[in-house]
Length: 120
Image 1 (cartoon, rainbow, N blue to C red):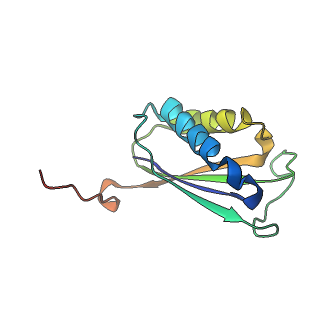
Image 2: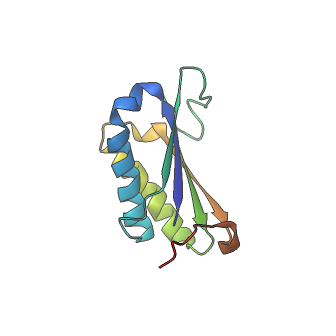
């Protein structure tokens, strides 16, 4: 159940549904997870609130979209790289420059998650 936090400039607000679908599609493809495993937070920022290097490492950025995934320990390095590449691909397909997407995965252990179950 990876959880995504996406920080981007406010100018993208009208396109949040597109970004949501793109991030989920990349996670589904990269992590081979169910399509209904959807947990995302979008944080919109004004100019100057997102600070980033326009060139590190070997990039040519003119904007930034931070995608932070919180995932349970257990995904292989290959799965993590595949998920981040797939998310970048999906966002690039929306017309966003690939250099402007920065992904990171934070891992937590199973006991760090809690979702209350409804009584049946």
